[in-house]
Image (tube, rainbow, N blue to C red; front, side):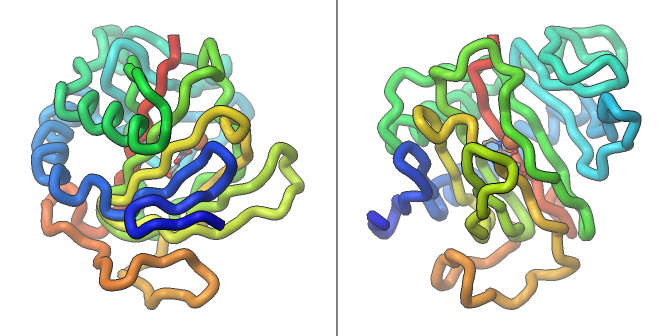
Amino acid sequence: MTSSPTRQRLGSCAWLMRGFAVAQAPALLAALQAILARAPLRHMVTPGGQRMSVAMSNCGALGWTSDRGGYRYRADDPLHDRPWPAMPAAFQQLAGDAARAAGFDGFEPDACLINRYLPGNRLSLHQDRDERHFGHPIVSLSLGLPAVFLFGGAARGDRAARVLLEHGDVVVWGGADRLRFHGVLPLKDSQAGRQDDLLAAPGATGDSGHELLRGCRINLTFRKAG
Ligand code: MD6
Ligand code: FE
């Protein structure tokens, strides 16, 4: 495994950049608060009829949605049939900078999916394949409480690595890793003790103090969906 203090390889085209966004987090959270006032977090329903435990919203030209009809990107928030809030410049900047640091130049996301995890919430193994092209990477930013990210292989049954994602961490993946299965283990109630088998950052803490993050984890994933 190739590592550096700032970049840790998770796959041939997948990188964890610990603490990459810690400094920008307060500004990102202020922008996020305004977005969520207009496009509130909600529990979507899977095509199979299950209510998702993770609450979601979006910003950008396109937003990822799920309902009985399937998974798809839409230009309008189905809660009120108005466009999703625009993607703030600070979000675009962060996503482009992170992609570049991971070797993907010129990343211009048009979609940002916002995921909010409360203790006990999990995201089962899935691939991200609702985007029009798989030639663009995905940039994922973790805020708030830490979570264990499962990073699997090309097949659902492949063994998955466990990666601890903490406040300010960014994961970027694309290329040969773009369709790897991944998920999130149930969120722990407090800042659980670090486990030896996880890739953990020395000295990192789980909380930033912003009220939006009280008792939860928020993950932003930036994609080029259209
Ligand atoms: C999460 N993330 O970390 C869920 N997908 O809360 C994802 O599903 C994800 O982190 C694609 C790329 C990066 C991700
Ligand atoms: Fe995903």
